[in-house]
Image (cartoon, rainbow, N blue to C red):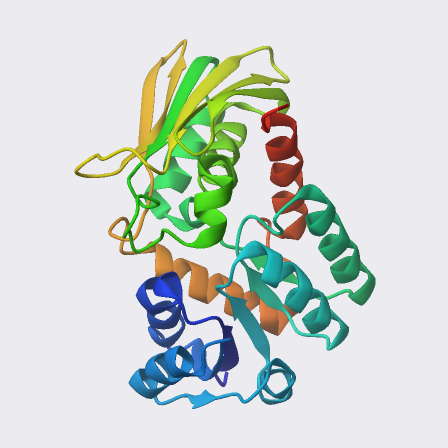
Length: 291
């Protein structure tokens, strides 16, 4: 089958490090065109992969089969709704929007348009983490702990982007941890948060089977290497997974690419789609500081 023509929306650090090489890394997809608010950044990525630079988002929609988003959540929420009206399948970033209202509005637009989606919960596309989740689901959990601690949003950091600095670890790192805990231990019924999302934030979740899990989140801790993963303690023993990250499982980008190409060609949404992301964003809202 011919490669799916992909339009990349955004040209920031993560688009350059992860999204663009992932799209161009195999025969299933072709990086056809790039659009970003900063034209020079779009030209930098496009030139490296022999893609064109779209003069506008509307022009991008006219030249591709599907879209991959790598922009801040408040921009994604607006543009993805526009793409849904154009009938474009989408690989979306988490969180869906900067708040729950944006996420719900986007989900409604996508449902009304009937376009298939996949969401970039990167850990869910790692074969080794999929094996961890399969093992965890087959055992009887007692409790679980998660962590995602790094220095990405410290001043001068590559990912010290305005929305991450303002919103902190809950909105950026929280989706990965909550999604993994939920998938490994069981559906989360309630979750509460304590601390300061801009410094150190603790989540305590109760699952539908009565198990309690906890997680620590920080984007501003001066660690040498990221501390990121989940441990599940079960009646049968202990299970552990380390999150993918930019230097993690080298198989994950290929899995994301192949499965998104299948979503586009089949017209059937991925298991990890906008509804999964909306479910996680509702948990984030529940866990947000009350003050």
